[in-house]
Length: 440
Image (cartoon, rainbow, N blue to C red; front, side, top):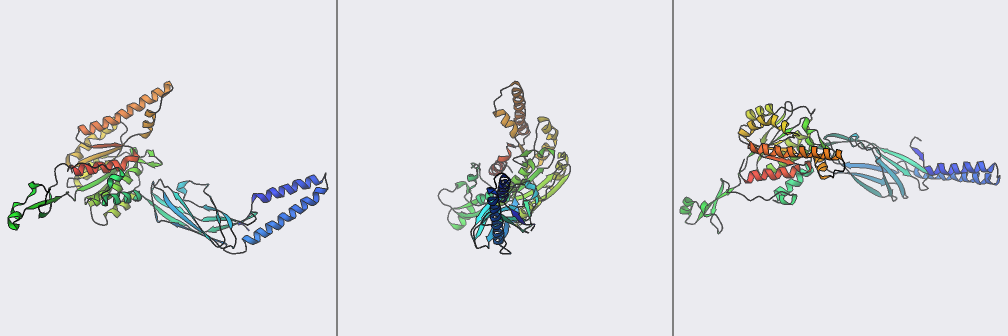
């Protein structure tokens, strides 16, 4: 009986009968009407209750959810409800979502025909990495007369791990494999010169560069033979992720750190598709993770698992320790993509000495973020003296961001100033540009 409920209409009708009983004190004719109404209500409730309790398992529900979710992306969840009753029922479904979603009013109303299955689909968008626990599925079945409800509880506890955005990674991987990265906004960059990594010797065909003719092979074959070159491969690409205080700023429900982790995952995957070696370094006050650059088949899975486990207290980061680790453990010249953030020119200048030391031995690419809140202030209209003051301060901060780019360029360090939403595509564009220009 704990799972038996009466719908509101029962109380409304009972309340109406009570009003008629009161009126019957003054007009006795209403007494029989009220009694008849109450009797019919009781009979109807009993009949409705018998119908919904006529089967032990009148409704069966189950949940189908992936073992892992992709952070920042819509992830599908399916609930299958089967109606074992011989009549059409109206049901309300409450799925007990993980606490991280803070969703306390989730409910779906459905109508299921007799002996039929209803497939319910909905999406969730997780904003933090970690374990999410789905609990029970609650189904409230209304009787045919809509007077009584029966509550079914299905124990469907499931743990789902939220990983960095592997959906985004797969999308770029598919485009990279099929040489269609332009569809995602990646620029086609004209190649300067040609690579000097030898691939094979082949017969000359019209259009081949005559400067690549191999005269020794030509003499042996008695036909024009040319050297064929390919893009240089097996270059080392490291993603350096700052997990310090400056990466705590939120954007679309996710921190800058999570945006950087998503971009690192995609960039590592594209690098492996391009036959380069991908590695990973995360740091804050101390070095946290060092994954040696490699291109073995399991490398992508190692990158994904490493990024999933990243935790931080958002302390102040130590760039000098980062340089020390890189100098001792990254022996070959590599492309180092540093995901960090600077909110003032002074904060950049404090770390400039360490950045210049790193750039002396490797190709360092600094990726930092535009303040989107400042951008919205700049685009808005100032209607009061206070608005003018706020807009002037916003322009000062925006100008300082551009000054940072110039300061890095002046010290021979390429950089990307980007919004979090364009982080991935801008980073891939820059990586392919540096690779095409043979800067690595």
